[in-house]
Amino acid sequence: MAQDIWQGTTSNWGTVGNWSLGAAPVSTNDVLFPATNSQDIDTSITTQDAIAVATMLIQSGCLINIGGSGNQLEIHATKVVHMGSGSVWYKSAQSAGGNTDLIVVNSPRLYGTSGDPAMDLDDDGTSLINRLVVLRGYTRVAAAATGTIAKVEVCGIQAYLSTLAGAGTFTTFTQTSGLSNLNNNVTTLEAFGGICTYAAGTIGSKIVVGAGARLIYNSTTTLPHVKVLPGGFVDFSKDLRSKTVTLLEVLPGGGWDEGPGNVTFTTKSLPNDNGSASLGFGGGGGV
Image 1: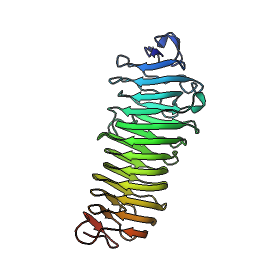
Image 2: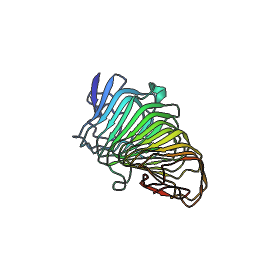
Image 3: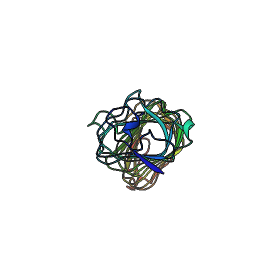
Image 4: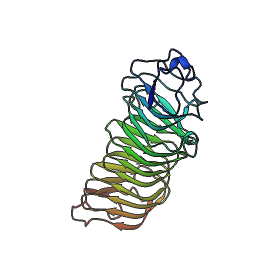
């Protein structure tokens, strides 16, 4: 694949002189945004929805911002890696080239310190993204991103992922560190570290909470099954609205907080009340 490098002196994606190959990228190009260029791109980017490129890499140290609210870069790329410090507003366009295999965010643009996210992720409503990995930085999945993401991983202590209400389904969500705030449907959620707040949406299968992880469940939809492994903790006390859990399963060494009686549990499988649970509140939780 030929590499087309952004060397823009204007903000227009479509200006041929802004690219090292003398033309805007096409499907045979690997697109590179180097650390040596600081020219933002915000012109002629919403008109690229018929364009496919091979891959897109924003290098570490690259300061440019690509797009903005309501002004996303609409292209298809099989792989997108964002390691720069700027904000990328990316809209995956399956119609231009099929599924996106991988999106990786490893950016120093953190939540709460820099305004816009490192990546605002949207899609054309039909896109399937096979894998989204958040290693570092603030990633936000837009409400209009109604396509499916097959596998989502949050796996860095400075990683933060949020989804807005209306966003598409995650088939599998796995968190090993960092923070997440989810407002979309998830088939299977696995938390093995960090803090995950499930604020709204439906769990299709189950939640597994492992050692070092805290799961805060605020959604009012019925939770089919939550399994708390030794060292994990599930918290139902932060949202006082009524909710139903079909099966709460806590293994010895796992912890849970049932809240002040607003949660209905169809079935509980809890450790014996002999000190084997790290913490338990309400409705028979042992300590």
